Amino acid sequence: SQQGEEDPQALSIQEGENATMNCSYKTSINNLQWYRQNSGRGLVHLILIRSNEREKHSGRLRVTLDTSKKSSSLLITASRAADTASYFCATARVVGSQGNLIFGKGTKLSVKP
Amino acid sequence: GAGVSQSPRYKVTKRGQDVALRCDPISGHVSLYWYRQALGQGPEFLTYFNYEAQQDKSGLPNDRFSAERPEGSISTLTIQRTEQRDSAMYRCASSLAAVSGNTIYFGEGSWLTVV
Image 1 (tube, rainbow over the protein chains, first blue to last red):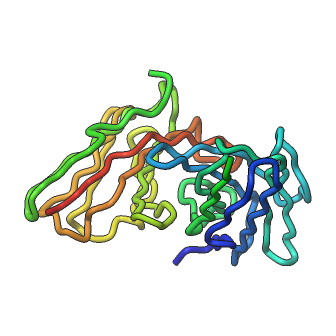
Image 2 (tube, helix red, strand yellow):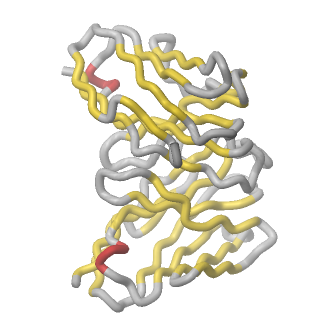
């Protein structure tokens, strides 16, 4: 079964606005990863946050992790039309190994110019 | 090549035929992974290798699915006697190692349609 569950399933915003996506998971983790998938393209790793971190930044991306609530959020600031994509969180089925990642169903983000 | 390369990109096959999907990982990457992704869903783990050794095949749905990586580089995912429910995108990925924290690089996938 899928461990990572993102919400909302779909999000539509105007260019320049911020987009926030959430992810919940069920078991213990070493880290949580976020990926982006453009339509018809490959899956691209965006950012990894370790279980002992609460917040991490990368450019316009901000990820938070709350291990007590088993949840994470991905914030994209000052969104652009090029940010239109599906975003997935992923956790490892076995702590310490990422041989077997569990992905959620994703949040489909649409940024309108 | 610079990234993970998969072939064919698109494959249409008749039900009952066998198909082989190829993955060429990033040079030097020890770990290679196969995932399957249905439309509107996230990727679903199938199997992974360290070098030529298959470490975990718990995600292979049944015995019609098999994978190999005989020389620890290129991998082939084979589906025998294909069924319509096998239609999906099959994604290959690689990383330096399967240890937590290593970035996993995905290929652009092979779209399989079984008619």
